[in-house]
Amino acid sequence: RRQGPGAQQPRGGGAAAGTRARGVAATVRGGWFGFAGSAVNALFGFLLVAVVTRGLGAEGAGAVFAGVAAFTILSNACKLGADTALVRFVSRDLELTGGAGVPALLRTAVPPALAAGTACAALLFLSPALAVWLLPGLPAGQALAVMRLFALFLPVATVSLVLLGATRGYGSVVPFVGVEQIGKPVLRVALALPLVLLAPGVLALSAAWLAPALLGAVAAWASLRRSRAARRVGAGVPDGPGEGRLVGPGEFWSFAGPRALSSVFDIAAVWIGVVLLSALGTGAEAGIYTAVGRLVTAGTLLQLAVRLAVAAQISRLLAGGLNGEAEHLHRLSTRWIVLFSWPLFTMLAAFPATVLSLFGPGFGQGAAALVVLSAACVVNVGVGNAQTVVLMAGRSTWNLATAGAGFAVQLGAGIWLAPRYGVTGAALAWGLAIVVDNTASALLVRQLGFRTVDRGYLHAAVVAVAAAAPPAFAARVLWGDTAWGALLGGAFAVCGFCAAVWRYRVPLGVGEFFRVLRKGSEGKSRRAS
Image (cartoon, one colour):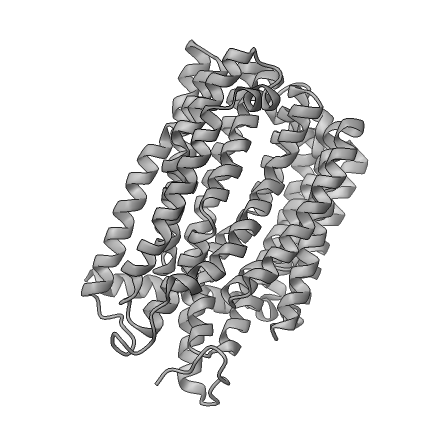
């Protein structure tokens, strides 16, 4: 029989090694696809910001993205933590019962999220004062029309996110990446571009951002149906249905409840600066801050990709009592995140004005904010997906405490700093929150018995810093914060990085990475034949 989550790991090496290899393989393949999706998301996110800002200017773009911020925060709040709970409990149920409890899990998760989304939509629809407060740069009637438009799409977007959480519980990141990171961003740009050319306006571009949510909901529902059908007819049930126990509503919501609040804090951390600057500063500052936020979010795209792939794997390993394999997966994924993410943040910190100039004139005012957030994100990616480990271990209250502490720091500092220092003040507040949240999460992961830093991690950190920092900052000194300096500094950094990765390929685990990819492609070829 399977061991429970708290059992000691078996000492037999063969089965554990096979399980470890399967977990790493699933993470690498899922992370590879997630990375590609995150890259598409970042690229089209940049394009959307550029299209909207060039079509409406910083003031009009600030109004659009203030509505996007409110919508994003509310849709994530109305999930009530059910999406993360489904990732954890669906993967555990597949491991322990073969999926017998998944229909009950869906009945527990979806109706409350739909009800919450509908209630919040009604509040937005009937609150003219809220619309005027959030969008002070618009006439009252136009502000109310924009808020009502966002309200109409809120329940659909909420349920879509919950269903995509269930598909991740089945071990596949393809539906989530396809809908949220590829489909929606691409469609938003495709809809916004002709509108900017023919009939630019805040309401029209808000509609272009919202419309893909309908197709996304349909795709999420269809993907979940396919996942359930494939599991029923497949041969992947470990020991047969009925061996484990079903999860009741009480256990589900005792985990999801704290996660509901912490997910609000997580998403609010990204967007609260836009809201504060829109309400306490100017729409132009909100637009500039949105561009800065897009850049630092793009820098964490590998971390997000790995998180999507690793969450269900860690939950499955912990459910089977294979804590050592889960720890290995966390250490290895963190090593890869540091190796590839730190050089990018180094380049952003070295040439902030040049990078921000891609969004148009005036955005160079956010250079100091980009430097601040790049430094904070070095800490963020440096601890890997510590929050995911805490959640998949069932400690949603711990995650709530760290996320709440970070958000309290950001909100308090933001209210004081944003009116005084504008975009830089909002960035300082967010940077403080990032450091507080991630440092606390790293300590909690250690409390769970997971070790993040090993020799491979140290090699990755040294390679990332030594390869990128000297050429980047040397080019900055010689040529300044210019396109020519960024181009030469980036070219030398890439050459140094590739040479260092090859030199230290053994401690970095490069061979394991490519062996997994090769075996995965061979397995797909055999299945196709």
